[in-house]
Amino acid sequence: MIVWLASFPRSGNTFLRLLLHHLYGIHTHDIYVNLPDPIDRSNTKDLSTLVGYKSYQSLDELAHSDEIAFVKTHELSNDDHAAIYVIRDGRDSLTSYAHFILTNEIKCAPSQYANMYAKTLRKIIYYTDRFGGWSRNVASWTKRSGPTAIIRYEDLVAHPIETLKLALNQLNLDLQPATGEVKLSFDQLKEISPQFFRKGKVGSHKDEMPPHLEAFFWKYHSRMMDELGYTRSLGIKAA
Image 1 (cartoon, rainbow, N blue to C red):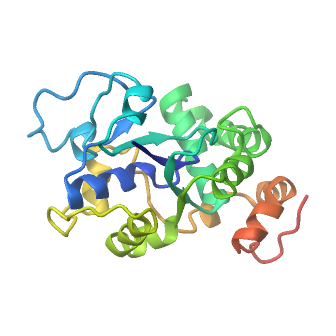
Image 2 (cartoon, rainbow, N blue to C red; image 1 turned 30 degrees about the horizontal axis):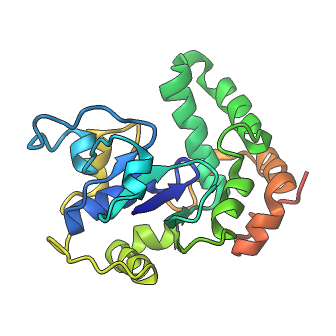
């Protein structure tokens, strides 16, 4: 049985996996990384250990197993497997994703970073070739027919244990907590893996999305943002 751990990139998916592992002792899968399991799981500074990474033979095998398999994905929904979907303010997701692309994919030189950041952010605001684009990705999971528990990133950060438990209850997943607490602070997580744990701040777009790009963002994503109840920054109108 597959339970998707789904989100648009930079929306809290990795933090969700960490919670599942530290609270319930659950090992999770990742459709983008399927390497051998870590040999030494005692290395607490390894990201794969932190999130309880586990390799798998095939998704079909996981789907037909009697055991629950939690699998990370950023892809559009295309089946009826159960899912937990994490929603984050599109402005925060996209600003964080732009930094991730520059740091991990482009490996942008510091001297070019500011200029490349604005160009990259503008592109991923309206491009749909990356996981369908933010609005389409959200719609594909929140409007699907399969059983889906929706988590708000803001709630996950503010009340991680309660938010996760509520999602599991919505899917009728009766899991027994292993510890009942998360011992790592966000600062510790950032030190261990800065490429994944950059800020974790709600409303980070206020410092990182220039007004003209926020106006551009609302041109493409106003319908979904309005549906989710997110509001424009003061003075911002759709471009």
